[in-house]
Structure formats: C-alpha cells, structure tokens
Amino acid sequence: MAAVQVSEAEKVYIMHGVRDDLRLDGRGCEDYRHMEIETDVVSNTDGSAKISLGHTDVLVGVKAEIGKPRAMVPDEGYLEFFVDCSANATPEFEGRGGEELGVELSNTLYKVFNNRHSVDLRSLCICPGENCWVLYVDVLLLQCDGNLFDAISIAIKAALFNTRIPKVHISEDEEGVKEIELSDDPYDCMRLNVENVPCIVTLCKVGHRHVVDATLQEKACSVASLLISVTHRGTVTCVRKMGGGSLDPESIFEMTEAGKRVGKALHAPLMELLQKEESLGKKRQKVGFLG
Amino acid sequence: MAGLELLSDQGYRLDGRKATELRKVQARTSVFAQADGSAYLEQGNTKALAVVYGPHETRGSRSKSLHDRAVINCQFSMATFSTAERKRRPHGDRKSSEMSLHLKQTFEAAVLTELYPRSQIDIYVKILQADGGNYSACVNAATLALVDAGIPMRDYVCACTAGFVEDTPLADLCHAEESGGGTSLALALLPRSGNIALLQMDARLHQDHLDALIEAAMTACKGLSKVLDDVVRQHLEEVSVLTRD
Image (cartoon, rainbow over all chains, first blue to last red; front, side):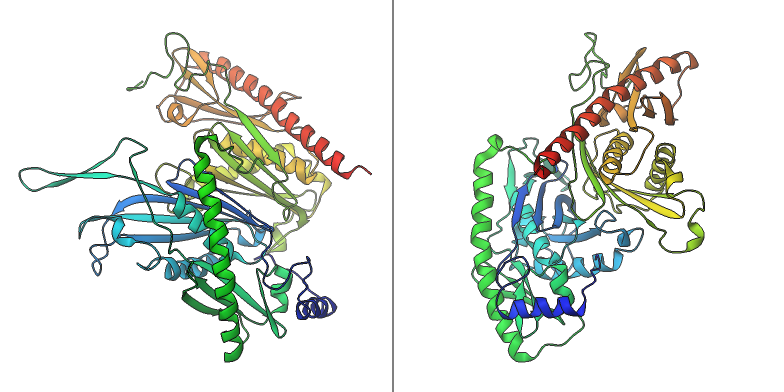
C-alpha cells in the first residue's frame, strides 16, 4: 500500500480530532467518504462493477465457468477470488510486490463470501457431483487510499448483483452420457440472489475511539483495526482483527456494535442504487472511466 | 481466410467499417489523483489504463541508473477478466514481458530521457478489456499519461495496427480480424517527424505489399494523433477554466 509519512504533530492533531468526532476531511467517526458505484463496465465479463471511495478505486469482474464441484459438497458451486494488486496502484506492487497483499485480501474474501449463508451456492449447481458453475471473482486494485476491504466488498456485492449466468439445458443420450448445452439467448439467464451477501466494515481504533472508512493518514495513527462483515439484517458473519497492535475485549464489543449499525445502514442505499441503475436498462449512460 | 469474410464485396468489414476507417477512440487524462500522470483510453472495445510515476530516484539497486539519461521502466499487464477466456496471471508471462519490452523501446525513442540523468520513469499499462490492438491502445494511453505527467517528449507517440486482406490494407484491426489468421502489422509513429518508433509484423507478406501496408498504418497513426491532441487540449481547457482566478 502506498506508504504515507505522518509526523508526531500530525498524529496528535488527527487523534484529537477523532476524540471530538471531527476528522481531517470534516467527516464524523461513522461516516463514509463519497462513494461512486457503476455496474456493467467491462463487457467481456458476466458481471462487473467499479467503485471509487475517496481516492480508492477498485474494479471487480465476475466470470462464470463450468467446473467440477468440490467432493465434500457435490451439490454446490463455488466462488474463486483473485486480487490483482497492480502496479497502477503504487509502484511498490510492481513485479511480485503486490502478491502478499493480494493473497491476504483474497483469502479473507474467500472466507467472507464463499459460504451458503452469503451466496446461494446450491443455485450454482448444474449436475450434482459432476458439473457446477464456478464464479471467478477478480478484483483489480487501481488506486489505494485506505479502506480496501470495504470498497472491495461493496464492489463484489454490486458485481454479483450484475452477474448474469447463462441458463443450461442438460440432455442425455441413450448411453447415459450427459451433454450440457448453453442457452444462446443472452436474456435467457440466471441471476444471483445477493440479498444476504455481506459487506465488510473496517473499524480503525484511533486513540480511545474508532473510525469507519479510515484514510491512509488515519490508518497510520491507529494501532489495530477490526474487520466485520455484516448482512443487511445486521447479522455479523465474520470478525477479524487486523494490524500489529492489540485491542481490549471491551472495545472489540463496542466496535462490533458500531460495525453492525454502520453495515446495516450501508446495505439499503447500495441496493436502492443498484436497483435504480438496473431499472434504467439500456437508457443508462455508461460513464466508466470517461466521466 | 477461413469461415469469416473479413472484407465484403461492397468493401465493408465485419463491424461495418470501411478499410481505412478507425474504431471510435475516446480518452480521458488525469483519471487518478495519486499517480503523477494517468490516462484511460478506449479504442473500440479495447480499453487501456496507463499510469506514469516519475521521474524519480532509481528504485532498488543503484547500478540500474544511467549517468546520462533516465531509465524507462515499463510494465504491461492484462486484467484477468479482460479476455474472453479468463487469464490465470495478469502479468509475468512471456507475452506480456515481450509487450513490456516493446513499450520500453517505443518510449525510449520518444521521451527526452537525457533531461533526467540518474532517474527513473515508470510507465504501467493495464488492459481492462481486450479486443485487438492491445499494443496500440497501450501506447496511445501511455502517451496521454506521459503528457499528463508533464514529461517532455519529442512528439506524441501514436500507434495503430494494420492488416492486409484481399490486396486491401485494413486499418486498426479488431480481435476477430486479428485472430482471423491474416497479416497484422503494429506501428508506432512520431507523427510530426514521420519517424517510426516501433514496427512489428509477425506474419508472411509479399514484399511488394509492405509499403502499402506501412502507408496505411501511418495514415491511421496520423489520424490518431489528432484525436490524442484534441483530448489533451480539451483537458487543458477544462483545467484552465477551473484554476482561473
């Protein structure tokens, strides 16, 4: 991640601001930065979304491929995650520089999203034990300015909402050999139910309080952060402590409560926006990077 | 040509273009705030993103730096979802290493590197969606990003591909035309001097046709240079309106 240098005086300034619920850019402790989301930006994918959160820019593409289900769960499809920390984001990611962060991010995403409580994995099954849909969720970091997890999770939810998987017809010949036929009609497709897909809320402990959507400067002042994935009902599906410092149990409890509150409030406007964008259909002016 | 008819009897191509017609080019500079220069370019359905960092001190070992000019460091990568079939790795394979090398050669010919001795200029390009002419989209996007970063250049570098079907040179090939098995020539031009920064052709072609093909690619590049110039001028206009007192 792009490193920022924060002096002692700046740290004190930021921490005192957080204590008074007023951050450097004028936000309160539980406010997100300005967010822009657009879906269906890459036409080579089955679903895609682009999000910019402050100066953090993320592009997510979902591609559906037919694969073999895992032996443990023969009647479910699965999701694969790959996070590409491209050199576009910061020169430190050049070559293999971004790999470590990429693996960390993709493993966390895998834990958060690839379970039947988040996505209806059963609907991805084509033929139990033989074929299923594998959704390759590829995340591309274009610019990093803190709070990667939240931005990525929102983008993934939007991309999954946008995903259209072609319907399949299975035919069987006399010898019992099954043949899978994909529908040619691009409108004959299956949509995913993203109602229960969680969003990640990262809370950074700065001084005695915690802030949501920390910028890189604020992150430099915090000892540790807590990552909470919350569904639209406010159910917590994953909690993870990140960073080098330690947190006391009481503040973890407080942070979880705040995360639930913020996460719950995040889902409604997101879904509303996605539905609105969808209802515009072909009339929607595609902006992408040109806007 | 197998199956597909790349050029109809009426002189139209698969996507309805005439032989010398370019795809629609749209671009924007300064897409990112953190980089020193950035640009996004769409050439038909091919979408490229270029970011420039520098000139700055050489990273890593000091032995890489040159005492009389700047080092140009390029990395080409493709988003894993950019192609019809999903790619396993965004960069590091043979093809993208080759592409990085070509970009480096192209921009060493255009950037006034001798103005920045012992320093480094990073150019990172990413293909977000591939539909033929990846190299040219990258060069055009990187040119805009370099202009955005304020790095002095001899001239814009404009690149375009050209193919040859039924004795007719076709400008700016799309993926279907590129993969049709015909000849494809990539050319990077410094339009004002008319010098060629990079020329590459991997297929077989009769020598008599080569001149016509290069001529077609050069005309296409000159057309592109106008588009790029317009993008830069328009951006400057917007910025100057915003910063006026």
